[in-house]
Length: 174
Image (cartoon, rainbow, N blue to C red; front, side, top):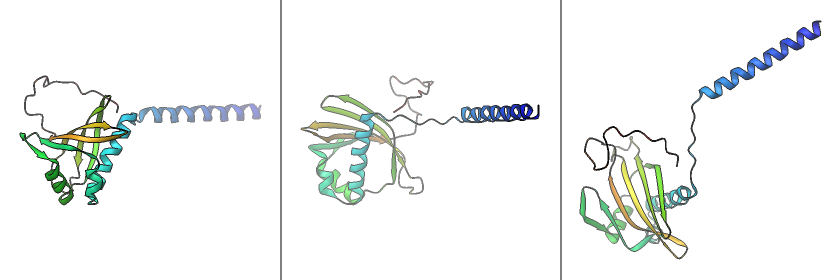
């Protein structure tokens, strides 16, 4: 009888421990975003571009750009920054510690539109977060950056056609 009671006690302790562990695991709301193949590819290209600029490697940055590359900024949309001027500025002032977040890639065969949030390091106090849209074009077997659009991110205090003030937050996975 003692053996049966001991066996039952061990069984109950084991079962209740598993139940507590399962409850603890289900209470933890950890979500790990699933990164798509395209987000991996273009995330790597964007990081390479930033790393080459940070290291002052103008040749490597230049090889990642189309010959007619330009950047357009939301504050001055009619005044594009040409390739040569952009290269000079990005090498002279690679200057921000930033993290690429919330990337989305739209693939149109030989063109890919890549949007992301460039989250600034708050300790640097150099700039606010930037919303980027990069248009990459496939030339042969290489992707080259054709045009970059950049605008400050974070303020929703202005009206944008097509955006409702009470838009629901989508739990989109990358």
